[in-house]
Length: 633
Image 1 (cartoon, rainbow, N blue to C red):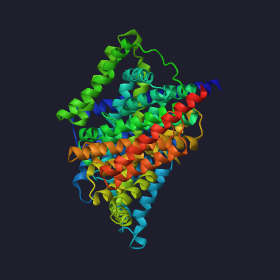
Image 2 (cartoon, rainbow, N blue to C red):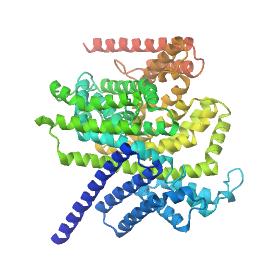
Image 3 (tube, one colour):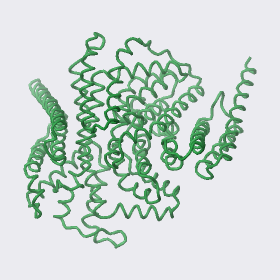
Image 4 (cartoon, rainbow, N blue to C red):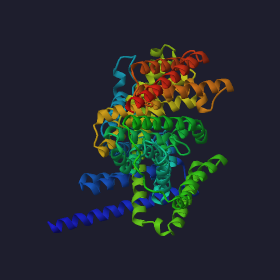
């Protein structure tokens, strides 16, 4: 037994070494490609996916040694070699592909399918399999729902064998992963590995000391900043929730509220400029809208989202009569010394993008900046870097980036089935027909569809599916490109806190030891604004800094601000004291008038009535609180 354990331990060490070495080689390869651009993006994406295959398969081998995994590893190496070596022939020969190419394409698709099932579960691969079957046999269905006839050679060529196609395993989505998403995820990992998040934690502690909700405010601030660079709700919850959730429970929040606040805050990090998570970079590449334009447009909605979330935490703290627990004393000198490792790379990223650097070169210089600042900062004894920990965090980022590469490769297959069969256009026409050219009804149908499609997927995957299927329908009714893609992006981001899957909420519930469904109700109450923002982007574009005149901008900002305050009070009826039935009805009526002014009349009359009712309800509640205090005396 001891001998077997020793062999297992030695094998695990060897496989860990292979993962680390391959990960380092992957980083060096991407840096070399950025600096030299030696060949076309398609070849780069083939090699990128090859590295991802090796890292993920070896990771599975480390967890569970199986001979079929070893066979899959050898097959992945063969697939990568074949497509790189024969790329020029594929590009130049119109009669391509031969049988060996078709077989290699099928192997590539099978590897992608298996890895996606094992990493992300069966839901999305099953959806993709249905798409492939529809593409193959859709011609046998009735005409109104059928697809064009497609023989197997053409099907395999379109889905995986033609590495020059914009669709399929090696399509443009994989190119986006290779050129942008992997580098950005690596940027977030490097920021964490070299100590950039210490400043964030200290800043969050300092901010939390000023609020009654204490640990909940700490969760909001730290998760917002950390989430804006990790690009992953689950990673964010793992990093910040490990200390904010126990602190919230200790301070008096029930476990369901602690899980909800952490999940809502971690999800929101992906919409907070200047970084906003990897999905926004994907949106920029997918739509052609400059990233800096997206970040600028989303700045005010992000501030509003976290303000509403903080209001939920504060109202909940008042309702539970929570007094802030003392937070750890902050050494402001240490915080200032840590600040450059976080602030300088982010400032550099924004400056380089503004002056016109490509995103790839921008991320390269930012990675170099983080490394240098981290090494310089580690000269302080209290900030000494642990090389083993640095390696582990970078490896975790590489694995995360590899997982995104694989799932985007499979999404490329699904997108191909949608594009080739005309399903996307057909679905868009159905949505427009159901909406009968009423924009609000179409948006409601799109929102429901987006939440269903976003279940159980990583955010980039959920966004791409929603954008492919739903955004064209919204654009058909005259909605600008930016709003038409921000609409599904928000539902993709916040699908991580909605049942029945809500993967981010599941992680937080496990950490908080809370009931999932009750936590989901609290999470929706905490993050309700996220489900309204996509509609507000269309009806109140001033919050995206898009407006015709000052009068219109003021009305829209005032309407959104009062609307969120009234909705917060309807969902969490507490101000100075618990609201009675009359006060609740006043707030509900106030909310109705404000919503009519936003989505209906778009004038000041209903907004003024709603605002006046809102203030009246608050004054009545303050008076009730004073009466209760006098009675207690």
